[in-house]
Image (cartoon, rainbow over all chains, first blue to last red; front, side):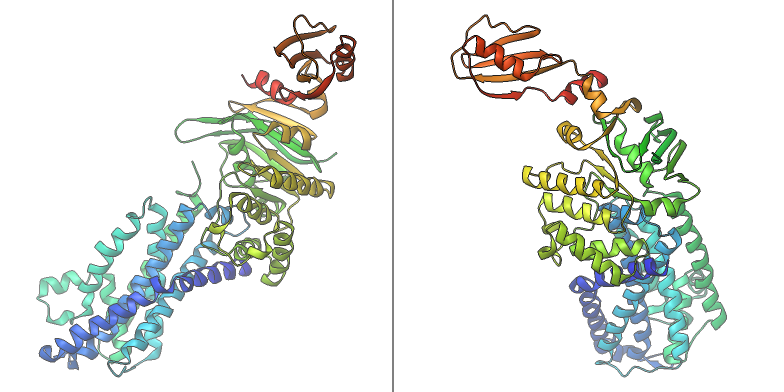
Length: 253
Length: 302
């Protein structure tokens, strides 16, 4: 089982490295633009957020957004393509158990989130000095976030029938939730209604914990910030595994 | 001889109520070269899909080398190598990676997988193209790549669904040669094909499916013996005109140098040639107008 798992992970990593122009370069360019526009050009006028320079404040959010989008994109596109070109049959005829298949694809998503996140962090370091308050909190938040969104991407791919189906959720759900999760601002500055609404956005908790890891500032208790993604990971993992076991959209009924 | 494959009342009804298999009982002996024939939509691919684990059956059982497929899923999967009809690999992946990954899915360590992949790619004359992506291969090369992938985990039973579809004559001949070698080495081979001459020349036993039912399962020689008549086309050196008479045969003059002779099994081809020679007609060339198996197949499935 370990060999099968390793095979899927290596395959996934080689896949996104092979197409690095599509997978690594665009987030790096987008990040540079974010920093240039929101940090460099507008940041000076905005001043400080929660007592931190604005350009420093947005850094954790930009990195986490990259992790979210890339972890999701990797599993959704890779699993959808295996369905599209029927290469999933390679796994179906083999002895690889379904939970290993799921673990392999999710690990691929984590790997891409890590690699692109690292590339983006490296790019950011040219613009600002990156501060680290707690590497442990950063690491835990990174893993929880990438696992959760890799699982969500996997489920999206199971149900996707066309290429449109794999771009709808990232564009119309993930991106807005990321922006509204406190990427560019502190939830504390919102009116109470919007602040209460933000509590239903899971990305808000991850964003808060990630910012705590980098800058040492946060609005939510850390245990709560970890509990939300852990709970979601458990639910998503159960759903994804059940879908695989039932052969939804991979075995003709 | 012990059975490599047996199905017991295997049935499949798809969610759209299409009854693809209606309780078939298929028996394939170990070491056999077995043809599973049927017209389009007869249920061959469905049967193969269930046997290899790609599809779930609605009811019935499959046993591979005496092991129940449902109770011994992994052991059964290890024993089967499948070469499906449609290309089902990632076209953007290098050929050697496709083989190494498939071995990995069966738990074969990467080091061993590389050696086995090298062996198979060389056998399939694809070694020089090992780092090319699969989509750059020709149709025949892709088929050979799929055959190599089916063999990467050293299965005992090889299932081939239309292996030579779209393959040129030369490559088809070399694939036949290689498959015969594998069978001689003890591998059980189950073949579905639309080329009936392929089944006739390679397979020892045969089953014919029609509308999801098994209409025949027989030894190939015995089956071919049932073909009472054979139609041959004869090119003559001398010009021929009606009437040509050969005992127990029906002769039709197609043109001044071509005869069509329908002969009964007790009349040999040399009897036909001798009879023509007695009428001062010499044969320059002769060929079968219809494959014997083809005639039987049509009579059984129509």
